[in-house]
Amino acid sequence: MKYSFKTHSDRENSKAEKYTLREELFGTKDVLPAWVADMNIDTPYFVLEAVKKRLEHSIIGYQSMPDSAFEAQIEWMKSEHGISYALEDLLYSHSVVASMDLAIDAFSDVGDKVIVQTPIYPPFLASLKEQKREVLNNPLVQGSDGKYSFDIEDLRSKIDERTKLLLLCSPHNPVGRAWRREELEEILELCLEHNIVVFSDEIHSDLVYAPNKHIPFASLSQKARDITITAIGVGKTFNMAGFAMSSVAIANKDLKERFLKSYHRVHIGQGSVLSQVAFETAYREGKEWLGELKVHLWGNYELLVEVCKKHKNIIKVIPIEATYLAWLDCRGLGLSNRKIKEFFVKEAKLGLNTGLSFSKEGSGFMRLNFGVSRDEMQEIVKRLDGALLKFSNE
Image (cartoon, rainbow, N blue to C red; front, side):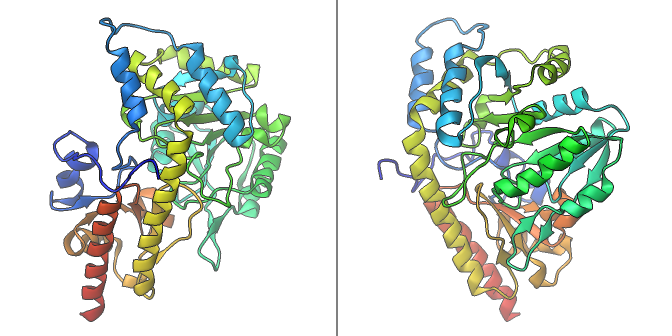
């Protein structure tokens, strides 16, 4: 391998959120943080070198998003995911959550219903609450193999004339699904039938493991393209969240005009010149790095699966197809949600996301971020194994 992911730069005193919030979230600093979804893996050196090069120019002022940056993303999306966008389809956004908030504002009104499919990334629910929309919850269903799927009949029974928008998470956080074309087509059919707009969060689209494949929702058909707002970017793929750089793809002109009313009202702007350089460089130079990263991440996942198999009666890893976020079924511990968190903090000395933060359907689960260096992953599984052995022997 050309790139090494064995170690990572020390973040302990770098103001990294996963470290600074440990005491607030876990009551102690004595935990290895495996929660917030950025990676303890160094941002690619070629991205950092491009940023250093730009700093040789002594003025860092306002700069419009260069066409070349979006062109790099367009080329990436076509080659990696088989979908084509025009330059005018793309808009800058500093985050997917910001894009989602704008979509909620643009395509629904106070009191309207918005579909979410739980368990789900917490900002999906928080954004709807803040904007006074009614959550139409269409919980995912778990099969005998542990994997989740859509409950189409439940969704069909709940949609009414007040249902305006669907917030799709694809690939899904936290359950790790890369949705199949036929699954997405069932969602599309209902949305077309009821004139529902789809906001598709596809920020993890590059982190899908073979033989699985990411299917952009807008790629299903021209009709799908005409009802979809897609959020994409480099933040997860190349561990660049700190650059605050993503994009929104809207091919339908009417949909884009509606979105732009909200977009311009909050003055999103064009982002930082350094972020623009990083964004373009990642797309132009990052394919080989990403390929090796995914091999590394899958190796980390296998280490986690191996240790959980040793304790299969009390903990299970839900099989994943995408992301670097493991969804752990901890119901075999026989503990309350509060006690499960306490077990991870006090016994394993690991800081994870609680399942309940992803909705009540997450009760009994925890989310573990395995997007870390190999040395750190080995420490995570060592701590988890020791805590589970102690629990089993008590």
